[in-house]
Image (cartoon, rainbow, N blue to C red):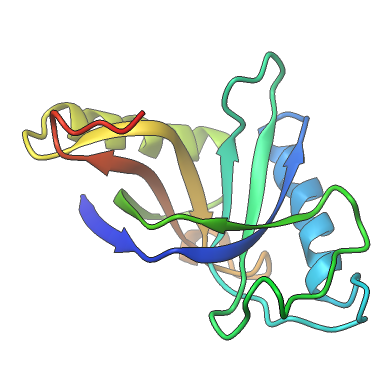
Length: 165
């Protein structure tokens, strides 16, 4: 288990109402469209890693947020407007995350296995309490053989007694 502090940063994200695997595929295509010129300037934006996917909180249907991190040299004002109205640009706030890294394919069952391991590790921690929903981070191209892919499952954490509302 690794604890990381992330600075505030800009992301392009889209919400997809589909099952886990299909949501990832559709969300990736939408966001790739934006960074590969599907915007009001026809501008390409560098692809960054990881690509993240998280369950959409407070949803009565199976839905997920797919997120691309925008390179640090951009501000919200500098970024082109997405052509696709389902893609939005937002600033994610600074946060502390508990992260569990693993290797392997992108199956939902593999992700769920490591998500459970992360929850167990946090349940036994006296320093950190998980809050919100976990997310899945993928670092490699789909052309990378599955056994060589680097993935992470992460959740925002806070010290016990300091939960934010």
